[in-house]
Image 1: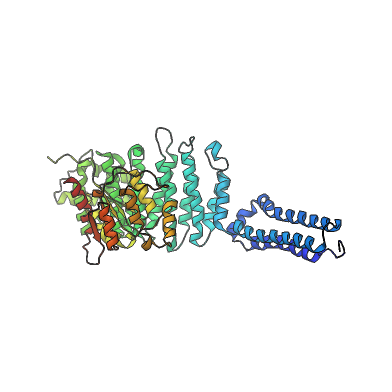
Image 2: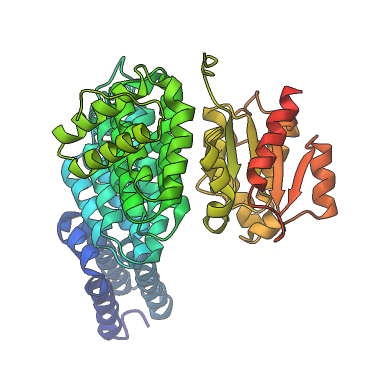
Length: 382
Length: 166
């Protein structure tokens, strides 16, 4: 009876082969971007995969010891021991693919790493954040990029809520979110704009000139501009609408960002007209109009960008000209200087910024407005 | 001498997930004349964010809406079999906003929002839905049909703004 049989080494070896082989197979089958993340975290992987092997060794040792002591009969000893080993194998088989085979788990892992020092410093760990961005960029197909962006969005929220946040901790996160969208292909990339835009909106929303710098907010506005232009090729006008309304959504404390918002809107609007996406350009003009209402009477960048965009409408055809004329009449009272002076300033400004094409269009608009007696007087700009 | 410029222009929030196909012909007239600032929200989470952030003169709501990322709306959507037609989340939103229902998990309701500022613009206008909307005090209800003019969105917004002025 006790110790009368032989130790079932075959069964024990089989379990150990499973415990070592299964994770090895899973890790080998992972996509390149996931393997890249895991390879950089060998300690973590060794801990996760070593634990079940260690546990199995302990169970095997204990079973053999009990068997040799002859306390119980062979049957129950080996059923209990081998059953426990089988359970360890099953749990490992369930946990390893979940932990390393799913992108949301990897993204969450990188997010936790990136936020490891957040509580104390209010900043994200650069290397983990870089890995998270790379992971998002390289994940395919497009829907698999979403987990990285969702984690980035959560990180942005947490950084902005930190009491030591001073408006300069999110540029890498923002640039990364933009890069993930830009490097996506196909119609599904529209789904990535929402979470990427949420990161940027959060940076702008958290902007408070009384307690923080401009860095993150300006990066976010630049990112929105880049995404706005990119959205023109996504075949979904509501995406452009969502981005431009975020750019034109200027409220109270973020007036200091008006100039940047205005520039960003102008760039999107110009690109929209060049690509024949008139509705997108109209939405951009609506964003500029919102900024004008919020800051009236206006001068400087906002006034010049608005006139510049009007010139693009004006030169796009007869209907564009009518539309521009109608909207200029609606807005001219909101400019600090008379419209002729703003037009001249716009020409000069465009020349200096090397926006020669826009400068030419403003000249055409000025000439035609003068010819049609729209009230423009000869100015100094050209 | 021109009259002094108004300090603001009316603001309208259009909560509509089908905007992708309807944006061009429905929002075009609003954008063309420039009198109204039109803000689009394509899901409930985004809509609630806007409603909590800013006051709108007109809120146009569809009945069939996706939840967005907020766990509360996602859960309601899940319970309805992840089907926005059955979930009727637009109606749920209005019940929360105007019906005085306390909903744990949601923030405080925007106090400025009254039924007079809300219009429902949806393909779904079953009797039960209409009854609920009337109970909530919503008077401007427009069913989406193929024969509507392109200016319908602008007209709905104008009706809400006019109703408030009168």
